[in-house]
Length: 335
Ligand SMILES: [Zn+2]
Ligand SMILES: [Zn+2]
View 1 (cartoon, rainbow, N blue to C red):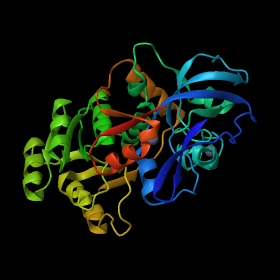
View 2 (view 1 turned 30 degrees about the horizontal axis):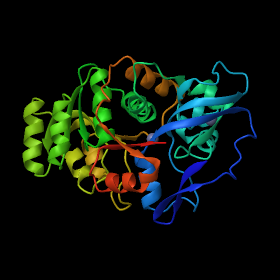
View 3 (view 1 turned 90 degrees about the vertical axis):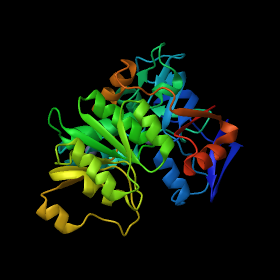
View 4 (view 1 turned 135 degrees about the vertical axis):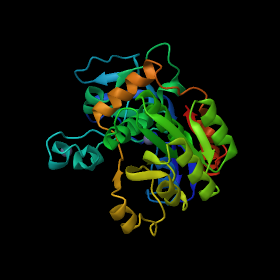
């Protein structure tokens, strides 16, 4: 079977029939396609995976054979996520599921950018769903990324009618905006790239250019009765993003960190102290967050149409390059 493997600064598609998918209880699936996640980009760009690693986890697939007691059968089209919490450890009991050791260990094998993948019994039981006929593969491939957004929105614990600013209007920023709208909040967005701002506006997000900080601050203040927004969702890790957030958030507001930044960047102590800000992180979704995401997509409550650019597996390097250079919003690799 063909897989896309990382070798230093390249992704090479090669035949790898030596990968054994038959050793545990679960199912072997034929991957139809797999979304290219921001985390795949980070792993590739910063070279934090070993040579030969197969990235990708946002898969849409058809079950070829199931070697376990499961309600899924051969021929079923499913969507699945890649991590499952143990439910028993200190982290799980406190709701910090993405810190759970078991969560970090579990994965689909060898990775989503592969013609075939092994999906464990646990995955099938906890995070896999049938893809309804009226939803396209590209749409349902947002199941896991939207799950991440759902988690972030829940963790922020906003009050009905609250406002949120999404910093960064790439695919994950737009998805966050969609999730926030679906939850009933007033959503603003900002970016530096005009095309992104335009698309956000088309999707019903009041979006602005944050290139000039003072101008941006006065727009946000004028929109929010001079308060600032109740919350800020940081889907961009750009150098200036923290300054933007601090200009926009109201005293007593919340900043949800959803992206890594250069290591030297941080939130100034005195801004947090004197303004009683809450800064909190959100990383990877729980099975319940994923279930909510599945319902949001399949019910049409969030709009995930026309966000993807499709690439064949052979062109996966192009997909990575185009994502890194912001040429496209979201790549979907079709097997
Ligand atoms: Zn992802
Ligand atoms: Zn656990």
